[in-house]
Image (cartoon, rainbow, N blue to C red; front, side, top):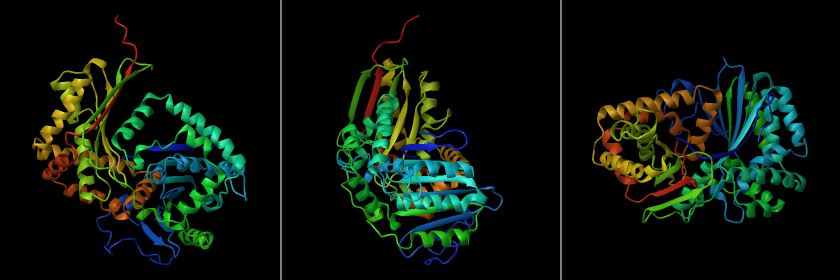
Length: 459
């Protein structure tokens, strides 16, 4: 359920930091009633305008806020080596203003309205959002719609933001954990764009020109690639009317929903790399990855979500029980699956004593082998499903969490994936987990370990 992002954020008042198709009917892609929709998604509605722009709304009259989100169906997956990092760069430039208002004016307006805004870039999409008191929501919507449609990327803004991003790149490159993830993705993929770092390279960041940004925006920042979500207390007819009028003359581009990319073949061999570098701490940073399902493989995604909770979410997970109770090792390993458009990675990560690297790897392989052979009990599976769904409910308690979930699944697969998620998770059986484990947890994996270049001091 998780996904890797690179983000720019700002918390106003505290700090600035780095209708035609559905005509107002309750959304359901296949006309099913919303009887099985979780309570926190009850009332969700979807419209698609004539130009392809998708609008998703969820009214919560008891909320003092409205969360305004714009998801753009493009990320680093749509880059090549020359323009790598441009998606994240465009995210930054969103806050540099338009002909109507400068970036400073834009931020000042949101500050005066009492808003909190943020943005993120992932491999698959870009998201911009603002959470704001309901009485000022329409004003914030105008600011965001102006920015998404009319950003013109003047050279001065590009050069100023280039310095910011290069500094961010420098800080990221000095982070051992960030380097760990980028390295594993580059080892796991040879053809697919997932192999590249979301932030780009120094060379690409220095050489991107205004023409590159304008071409990228024209291609991907188009109505059919955008989803606007309104969650909270707001006047729906007024907001929909404003959006329809604002974007009515916006030209189309290339639909990212049907993009075809070169897919990596399955891993042909296991790849292991252990390096020593100077950094604080005495433990080695351990990251092990298996090729995981794409979001189109829905049954596999559901089963894998449960598997990672079983394996490495919490102190009572199978892996931590293996290390703590069976092997008497002071090691905690987390399991994560980052849901992606194309086949991604299932990751096992943690900090381990340098002398235990091989033992940790062998333990993970052994646990996965046992699961593939059917060691899980029905009780294990039900416990993991309960924990997973509790996490799902907790994530969607806030307006921001609801917008994140609905926008994320709409971009990757469609709203029904989010609306039906709870019901479908409950229907997954033990044999589904065994089948999925055998499909993805093969003897081919990637492993990258970063050790401190100096041994720990002995007292």
